Length: 278
Image 1 (spheres, rainbow, N blue to C red):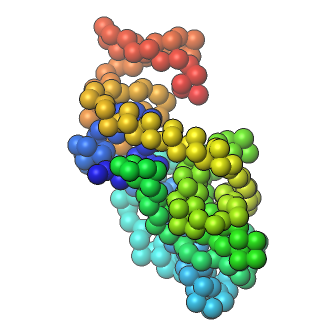
Image 2: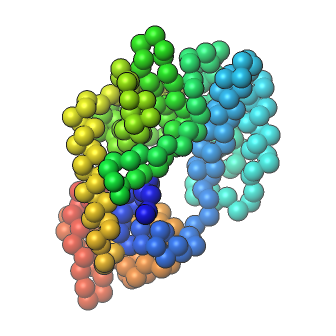
């Protein structure tokens, strides 16, 4: 049985051919780890360290936090990490992480919010034969209200609007998993920390919304499992795809103008609306 994940599902929706390259053919990616992903990983590990120590009853200070971050960065960083924005050097991204952590530390210290788990792996059983797995950055439980909080850290430079978060699938899937583990929950809050903006945003789901999500995911898995032709889905994301050298569309001359509705691929055309490239 294949255990799906939010990332696996999203890859298929973005481009079935990319899904095939990554999960079926298991092709080695063209593109090395990007600096943004590396920064996110090191910041996540530092926040994990803070809360793991807090759960043990040890209070962490800011100097120790930045020292942990710097040591981990220096240990893990290598020249193979890809920096697309050539005007920025590694020090630029390192300093971004320092700023993220200082702001977060100032807002949330001394980290006594009833955190019960960090980087918690959960298995989400939708129904027999349909499983997903995920990792929750941080899980909080308030024993007085019996409310659980699913926290997620974002290090990118894009602040999502509230209406988009209210439709976010990833944390809602995690909510389904938490409800399976703790059946007598009063409520679940989905919380995003947009570290580049020092902003926390919250969303909730009704039982009806979670049930619809559950059925939508089952339908999507059925679609993936029944797919025999994994066709490419050209979009502006193609130029960042890690499997470009394997894609027959990317390796053909592609001309696209916003007012047009088709990609011109030599003697053939692939229909793509301008909205799909937004």
